[in-house]
Length: 113
Length: 107
View 1 (cartoon, rainbow over the protein chains, first blue to last red):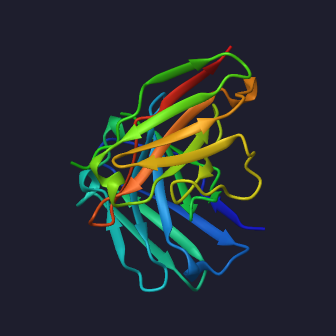
View 2: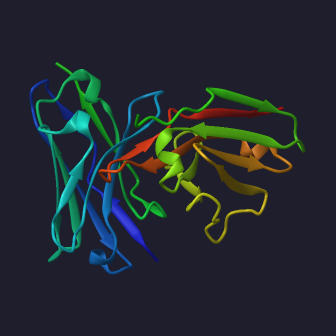
């Protein structure tokens, strides 16, 4: 069974950096991209970017370029999403997904003074 | 332009057919996907490659494509289908994007 298990909820101050992990199991990690999607409270889904675990190449949504870094560690089958210069508008639930058929449970990031 | 436009809401009575459209220039060149999301839950993939259904998705969900518009059709909508629905596609630079979402009401 494919499973994606994300790290726990985070509370950060404006200007800080958050790094969320997504541990994959049940499939060959390098066979599929790992995507990151976020959802602010009461808002829609927003694609942030992806990483190809095979070669580590990442593609980011334009609005996050320069603030987001998505990586993959093939030794632990874990994907990471790091978002810097946090602001209140970054308060959201962050999901990892592989091939969009399996999703992590979501990680709530709250940005508050 | 790289945008996906969906209606904000659609309403149908139980047993009726619901159609949710999604339009954007990229849809003429790129495949689309559709997702269902219920409150407090992660999204569920309903349709990929415009009209393919993953295993386990009921047959009442179908997708179609025509030019720059794709459509999710729910034939015989059920109360349990009440949810938010999102279309999704990719740009020429391989960036992905979701539509803003459509709230489906079945009552």
